[in-house]
Amino acid sequence: MDGIWLWVFIVSTLMFVFVMIRSKLGLRWLSAIALNAVLAAVLLYFAELAEPYTRVDIPINVVTVATVAVLGVPGILMLAALKWVLF
Image (cartoon, rainbow, N blue to C red; front, side, top):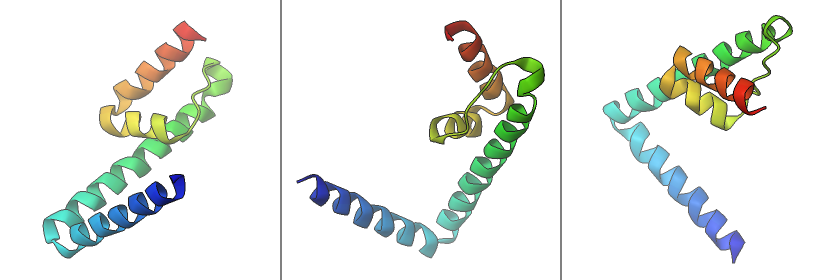
């Protein structure tokens, strides 16, 4: 039963991407989202390079990249504060 839901998700995602690519506005949205995700990953990478000096280790995963993609630099600061306070 789990395999069926996985295939439904994959097919619906592919259909959504196909519809978005066919329209000019959708292609622009997809490229903007991809650019934000890449820039967020680069920012997190540079934050990871500063880890020996700050002693705050922020992992690069889907949740942190999405947070930084939406919030930007304040998102990195929020993640660092959460890491510092909770862990």
